[in-house]
Length: 275
Image (cartoon, rainbow, N blue to C red):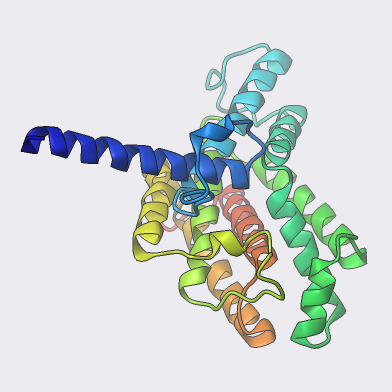
């Protein structure tokens, strides 16, 4: 085989492997149905494209919101920037996003609320978080979280909302997965549903960083406070998990994704700027 042909073969194999990683990430982090032959056990699931999955979830949520917004208001998006998003349209967009991920991150947030809300030793927290039943702290936490998302999105201008929605999903997923480079992964079992996603290399982190921040370039002059608040929440959560738990679990990362996403919306909805 000559050199050009060898290079082409290597590039095709590399592309196939990355595609398998991406489809593996979709399989683990969403409920999007994919043919089983699209990925293999050696490369799937993969955390490398976690932020890119956020693009897809955010884009589908935005698409549903835009369609509902047009049907309800009877006008195209952007025709009237003075009017805010329709509440029902926003709620439909949020609902589709939850269904698309199978409430994976919301479940992690609720479990984290239960584990840390009841206190006790790290082992006791871990036992509570592994319980499939939801407790008082988890139920109240997820209720308040969804309400915060809903009302924060209503405060954002209609013209900016699509890019902000997608950016929040991508950025929050990067911040969640990046915790594995700073904190130890804590689990009571090698069979944990998240254990296969905990091996994050520098390349994986760099790819997530790229896809996590790229959408922000479309609205760069309007998201400084959103980025700052999300980063601050990320730092506070890491310090809290390190102190109380000695590391993070899959549930903790789910909580990080949800909380950094919602504070991003809140600060942009308040229209606070530093430019």
